Image (tube, rainbow over all chains, first blue to last red; front, side, top):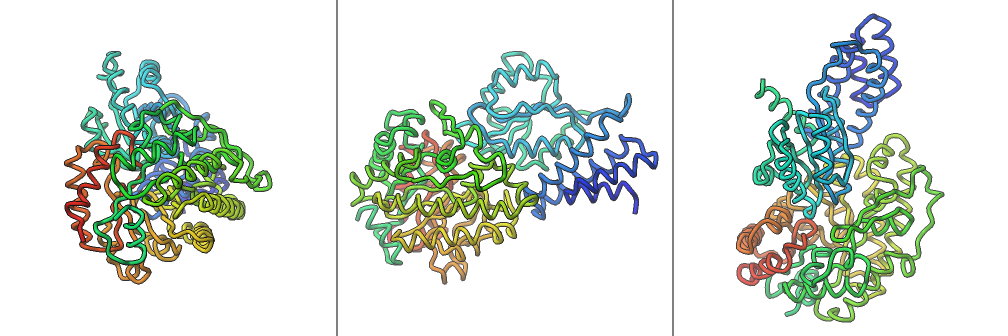
Length: 213
Length: 344
């Protein structure tokens, strides 16, 4: 079996040891780090995303796969040179002000990283001004917001308003998600996209990028 | 017929005058009585006053003394933050090291914030306990564990250290039994058990069955044996794939279904009919109850009541927790719908 398939399978099953062993074998065989990431790690996370969407795996399985992927990235990233290190998109992500729920946001963050995005995770309880500031600093292609409470979902609208007021709304696509959020709400507050789960969030980004190209 | 009689009727399988209405209102009761969520969450007299006020304003059939999902976590030592007007949450988990030996079993009567909910339950029971069904909330074994260990840690613990997860769930189940008994002693008619993380949105049906179901059985069995008239078990999100263990095997009297589940189909399944489990459900608390008008809520409630037919095992509920902006008008609309369209 191809060594990159071994890496992929190890990540999918969340086995850190086998992931690292596979990566070392691949490096020794002269495969460039970018290729190992694309064919080993990113394809693995695509499988994970599909299985999650289909209800074949759940949050614990996704988290251990992500842990294996991250362990792999930690070895490979420093080995990458020059133009090899090109990300799919830059994403600023966070849970809105007043809301401390982070697991959904973390899963989205993981899947986006797994799809080859550069992700700046601001954390939880993020005020509109903090989102705006991060957009100013990182110039992301996407701003992703999470809210798990009906009492905090209005903060999404306020964050979009703050972006508009700052003149930074135009350059960034706003994505929203979280248990009480739906497409209708996303449309009402003027978001560019809604995703029902972490795998869908990646699909959404890919669709928007394709449309833009 | 008052709310207490109405719910006791359906618990006995008898016909009440109309479909009972019992939305999940806890912090949702704060604003209508003129209080912020922090006051509701920290002062037992205000907690009870808000619940009784919302009950009277809306006319539904019971109250649920509670603060939020963090009660058990704070009781064992997780650090909780109380925003002025938002739901309190665990800011720092207690169990950073995966060892159950670090935990001390809290004494509910004296340990805050359990003692606060017990006191609020006592006050509600004294004021409306002969007319309304009083069902304070406790957290289920897995939810409590999440508030002590952290949800993400716990999810990974399932793979890295399953024995620790079992021990932690043993602890949280025992804690739930003690806390639930103290609430029953304070005058509660039944106990509501919140389990956000058991649905397939989080863990597999296999993990649910293997790790959590035996503990929920033990918790529910102990509370019913102690004299609870009922238990209401609430698992968030789409629980259809685990409906049999959840609604039948746990032995719960009532399941409280979130808005993603089809209530009529669930209620009419052969095994649910055989188990005689009651179903409370299931408007959409965000789309319908928060952002809809009273007319929207009436329409949605009517649709739900009609989909179920005249079934004595049905209680009209709110799916999940009600937002303060839905009280009183939209919760009152649920009651109006039951009066108009839910007469037996």
